[in-house]
Image (spheres, rainbow, N blue to C red):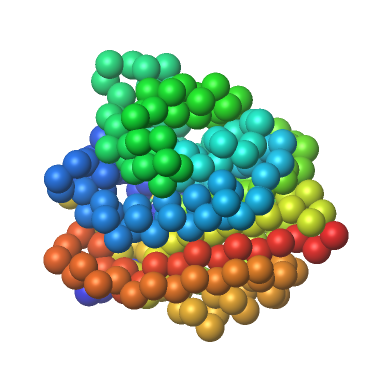
Length: 262
Ligand SMILES: C[S@@+](CC[C@H](N)C(=O)[O-])C[C@H]1O[C@@H](n2cnc3c(N)ncnc32)[C@H](O)[C@@H]1O
């Protein structure tokens, strides 16, 4: 399929958070339910809850209107800062935070994490725990040297980002540059966790098309090394459910856990 790069303006004009949540996370139809959510929830559970990565603050970059990626982190960090480029995504996230009746219902995902943690019935308690840990909802732009400009954030223990960098980055040079700029946001010895998809060229949000940087395994690890990180763990899993390649044509999932040198 011919692909044209999605500009920041096309995100501002066309990315509808309600359509995004419905397309990807709605029970019974969400394209990312199953393989993707199982992959992320399991890896983050193993890394945070079982793996001993913990600290004061975790910064989620490119949160979108989503909460699933924060459900293990809220067990081991005191503060969570979420951030996204789009005002409409930050507003949708705030709806969940404030228990707005119009907020997306994440119960199915929260239940899965409670089950991983061996507390299957504590869905409401878990949601409240996450809400209590989210201290800020900020604007960010991956393409700025300081993505939070004019805000200067104190460096954090962990920067987490899911399904984000393939959106704003035109090529691997830009991807590597974003990783380099992340260095200033992370404490020495701190953690960088990127979870996303490979070999993808597009994804749909409702009827709107968005481009995706086509990331390949060999370029990916090289980008982390070139940006000055030590790779602690890299997990790659092929996509087996190919039923909705028309919605998003990614071929593999990846999780890279890297550290900024001390
Ligand atoms: C596919 S969504 C992922 C959202 C969420 N992390 C998830 O896993 O469901 C891509 C996200 O990248 C964000 N994004 C697009 N351009 C960006 C930029 N220049 N800087 C930061 N985030 C950006 C979008 O607003 C959107 O929330």
